[in-house]
Length: 629
Image (cartoon, rainbow, N blue to C red):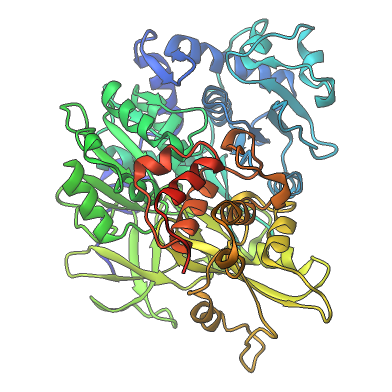
């Protein structure tokens, strides 16, 4: 049994937990209305305006026929809109899920069915018209601060997206009277839903109750030093639990200020570091992939965190390599807090820092507010230093996956959550992650279920057999790879496979390495030997074959097409991120690291950030006068 840092129903460390409802109501009344709640590059939002929006939303939900116990989805990139919809829904007793805006229409339809949504709040994006699920009630709106388009109130709320007419949330609420929320919400009421990659291609919907949320934020109170003076910079997507919990939720409850871009791109890292200094940021929330790029930055940025205001960097979402951790702290002169958690634990359950008591570099720290143990395959508790599966138990743990009782029973046994992560612990209770039992791929802090990619590949005409799996990657931790068996007489190359997948999968799920084999290796029971495929594929190159014979420009175009999942004839040297399909932050770094490997070179952080189009990449490679070996 692991060292216990607190357990029991909503009683942690010997004190009663203040529930989310009380925390919300205290925050709505307890902080100066003139203080900033949110600041983006476009606008600043004070607490008076934000609180008034929340109170009008309570009436608005009633007008839409929504009530306690219903479930809604939010499909938006705009921080103010997402914050207002999530906080108001939770306080009204309405379960809410923030949907990844990058989902394909097919993924969105599957997701809304899995969540059982009664209503969808959809931010209209003229550059990306959506085909929304049939039969789903939808409120369309334009981003916070957008222009009005005219018309009457409720009639405009449900209009067809194809009409091109929509208002901002503020404009919709202009004629809505504010009201107070329900006085009480039962602790077992659904508050938040999170997607997590499951053991099948269908998404698992993690259900988090008000009791779960209350427990998590009580633990935050014990561990972190957030206050009304905190200025939190969090660029992580708001459909991530880290983007939400260490974003609008903790900001609202503690009277802090949240700073965030509407949509962070890795090419904006310089701007992000400048903002830390300019805005007197106290806490920076990142994933290890961002730290890996920060570690390449030149000496001119090393003073970023050397101010009396800055407290620490918080990293989560993926394994933080010890060497990277030590390098960031040494070069930038600031503390990195490494945490561990999963959707099933709301956000996090173990903490290496910020206090010295919890801190040990190279570990995920100690558990706070939960029990833990490390067990063998038979469920027997292991001794100090032995490797086994990490199990967690406590008020953080989800009540289960929506409409999937079998998966819930397999994941949570006698109150113990099976994390699927292999771990060891020392005599002082510091836990170290040693690997994973599951096939889950974690790339750039994003969980990817390989079965979903495998199912997509098997649906492709001409593919007889296939499997997706993860391979190590220097920046992302892991990248998606696939081994494919083609039907007889079928010819297909890697580019064609990636382009096919791009029609059905979000960009971060696309295979980056594809190998074609005569047959998949299997054991006598018929299970694919993924470990063998990994060992055979780890030396493969994203652009194997054609790069060796191509000019630099052709090599860049070919590799970019495979990375973005688009036909090569869709690209040209003037192609740039803002206008190129599939060119997001993930693809940007994936393209760069692939070309670094193929051309046996390394770009500086400044060079990576200043790649504004494909021509810039060609110029960088040409300047090195290098060709792939």
